[in-house]
Length: 442
Image 1 (cartoon, rainbow, N blue to C red):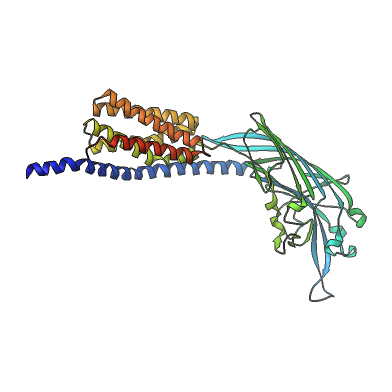
Image 2 (cartoon, rainbow, N blue to C red):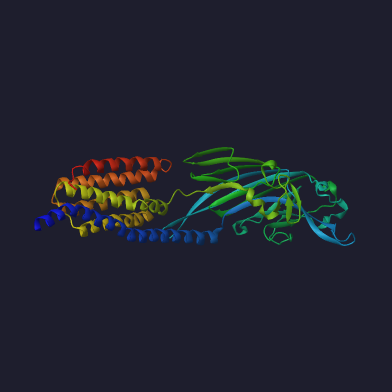
């Protein structure tokens, strides 16, 4: 009977130990979760620093305009005698923008914040303001109340007084609101007396503007062209259209856009705060024309927090494969390792990510990955050498860990091929485990 019990225990202890190791893998997900929370906390702190610095400099900028606004009288629908004031908005036929963006890197503690200054040269023309499309009689126009509006997302970023050359008349724009349908923008009264003053209007202005992160342009012209140049080598083009031409290299980038009216969801003129597009019967708020904007983010390449968060998603895989290799080697070589020692090895693998996080805040992700890997594999090799008392087995397990960390690092770098590489790696790993498991007398 005693011999039978001993035989049953001998045949079952491998399965029991395998079950204990599986439970350890699950338990180690608890500290891995707290490391994820730590990464998220540090990333949020970085975002708060960026927001704080940007708020004192200037936020994202979207340049729009100019828009010509003509107040006019209109008979009320319920009475032909009562009149009320309404506003007609007209967009220019041509808008040409040339922008020179100078990136500025600031630091809040250890966190880098991307700021910029931009010098803008804006010019264009109203060839003919078509009142008839809105069915507005010239006699109803309040000529002495006409004004022009230019929208700048964050006027705190303006370094100089904004002046607009309007048919050789110099207008000074101010935030004094003349438009009841908008609470944003800069305004200036324009001198108009008759329909003749609405023909061949030429305008130009120069802006010296601060901003952070993003620079957009709303295509208010029937034809809008934008030429953008910067020394920042990491642009991320966004918006409803991409640039027609781009040139990006280590010394900066050049990009140019051309937007035509038929590509937009809003017309050249409308009344009050709503209009119906020619493309759809849907009424769209005039304040939403900014959704047609395009431009560029002064993109900061993927920061260490994002890569560290991506890497810790492989923590369970790294622990499982390391334990599997350790288990196969100790079993095939008749060594005995206590589950407590498996737990210590697992904690060392978790601490890899805290090392990676802390170093990446100072020296970047790639170098941090190398340093954290060297520290972790060194600790692992030292501990295993004492447990197994075998330099050969220690070398084998250390090589396994090196290949594992190299495999994960490659997946992180090759984002487009990560699924393919991950599938192939797991398939090969499973094949190796199946090969060695054949030698075990389960």
